[in-house]
Length: 429
Image 1: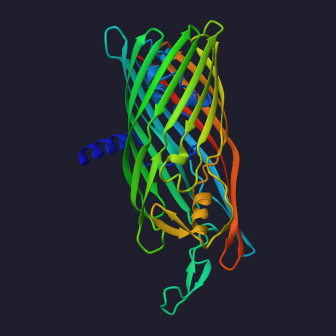
Image 2: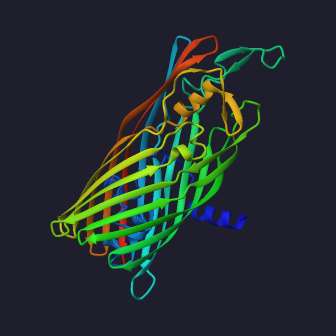
Image 3: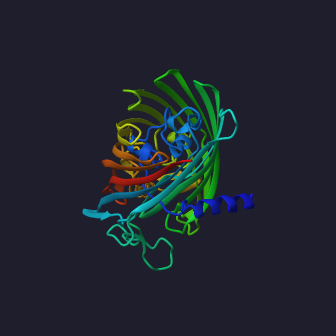
């Protein structure tokens, strides 16, 4: 197992994956991978347009999508520009902060090619960042470790203080490598399987911790008529555990935290028309956050996501215009009317509810719901296509309120909006 860990770790680091967090926008999952899928609202379950999104969205589509005509390799880079901010009101005072501004770069690559003479079997491989979330409020007004006077709690004759907030610095990133295989049962039906190998990193202020996770993705694509494709895929839950990552119970010893990538089900329908110049896809996705370890303890609810994508060949086989929209419910439940002194248990460790609420509201504002996307594809030559895309996630917020200490009214609020730019090359060899 140590050898396998080192091998997967080395592959992901060699690709520049797994060491840089960013912000994702369906909970802490990206809406899609690569400039084509992302510029079409994260769609691709029924008819992906490149190898990266085929492996990510539905491995069965490697045998029944436009990119199946010949072997293909894709290389992509996403630049994320998140803008989280937060405000804490307590004891008649207000403290606001903006997270340290950064641009996060997330590379991805994918290949797909036939592995038998008849072309019914196809192998694919993809490596990409799939999830990320975090804030950095260090050095701001809310980064105060000695805000609340607590008296002589330790009995050493000196006053003790409690911090203003938990979750001042959080950094989660998950990258995958996914070898995949697809089989065309007949010209209108394909099935596929991906093996997911995850490298997850989490830093909650006590240093970066790493772990590996594993899972499977199953998929099928069916063409009931010539111009329509229907795709269905299922992803198993995938568990990771981080030791000594945060002192939840305040006893001076770091505690562990298990985080589970939730099981997912997605259904997509795609239609082509106007002599194949127009393609429209609608995808629905279900993410079982409420049943995922780590997320259920922080009261995330299940999420339903709808993606709409359109592609139009302005110049047939040469210039492609793309647009999309992605919308889902906010999975992070808002809490009001709580008593900050009551205890809350997180995976066997007890912490005051005040810091529990701060941690989930300030530290992990995974609240984005609406995303608009645009993109462009240009066939530089017949075997080489340049794709670019842009995504904007509209500002969304979350708030929580209660009391702390001697009845002090307290309130937390966080807001987040995002932009990203994608660029990629498709090589059909």
